[in-house]
Amino acid sequence: MHVTIFLVLISFLEYTPSIAIQQHVDEPANSSLLHIGLLGCSPLQPTIAIRLQCLELYHQIQRFQSLFSIQAFTKVLCTLHNVHLSFIILIIHSHNALVVFDVYLNILRCVCLCIDQSLDRDHENWPMSGACPCCTFEVSLKSPILIPRRLHCMDGNFSAKRLDGSGMSDPRIFRSHYFIPQADVEHFKDDVCNNCSAPQTTVSCTENWTAAKAVEENKIVVFDQMGIFLVASHHGLIECVTEMARSGELAKYGLAAVNKVLDVCGNDQAIGHDIVCSSRKTIAASSIGYKAEELHLQLVVNAFHGFSH
View: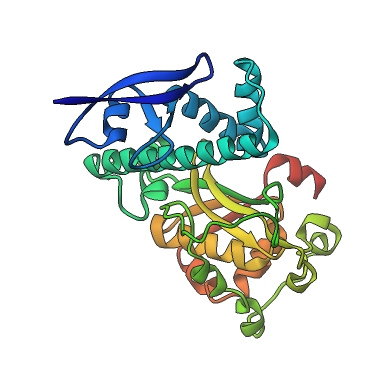
C-alpha cells in the first residue's frame, strides 16, 4: 500500500514547487526519497527534498574551496531558478540545506566505513601502513634491502586558521584514522625541555633560517586553530595529520608525527623536512631520540631548501 507525499524539489538543474512521491506505509519518508536519488530536509515528514547530485556538487566545492558557505550555495540555486527570497526565508532554506548536507556526509562516511571493513582497511594505522602501494610493497627476502626503506615528508600549513569564538562550533568528534589524537601530541609538549641534558649540536642555519623559528605558544591567542601538520608519502598520499591548536609550528607536532612513523613503519625510514637542521636537533634532544637512533631514522632536506641552506 502506498501513500502520496508532496514536496519541494531542489537541484542545480531543476526546481519544482510541488512533486508527488509514492511512499510505502511502513517505510520512512527518506527511504522512499533515497530510492529515487533525493534526500529530505527533515527525518520524519520532509517538505523539501534535494537531489543527491546537488549535494555532491556542494561537497566537491567544499573540498576545494571551504570558504564557499551554504548560504552562498543557496543564493546560487535561487539565482539559477529565478527564485527571489527574503532574507528570513533565505536563512531558513540555508538551514535546511545545511541539515541535509550534514546527513549526506554521514551517509557517505558510513558507506566508506563499510567498504574499508570489507577490504580490511579499517585498522588504525592503515593510512600509513598500507594506503600507498608503491611504498608498502616489499619483495622477497632474497632481494637487496633498500635503505631507506621508505621516504616520507612532513610540514605544517597555516591556511586552515579558525578564529576562537567565531561562529558555531560542532561538539562532535570527527573519527578518522588519519588524525593523531591531541593527547598523543600533548605528550611531547615539554619533551625537549625535560630532556635538555641530552647532547646537543649547534647548527648555524637553525638560527638563520626563519622557518625554523617556532612561534611561542602563548603568543597566539586569537586563533583556536592555526593550521595542520601532516606527513605524506613521497608519492603524495597523506599518512597522518594533526591539528595545530592555538600555536605555531611547535616541536611537539613534529615529534608526534615522527613517533608515529617509527612505531608503524619501523627501521630505516627517511623523512624530509624543510627545517631538517632544527628537526634533527629537536629529535635528538627528545624522549624519542634513542628510538630514532636505534631504528636508523634519516632526516633529509629537499633540494629547494637544501640550496637555501
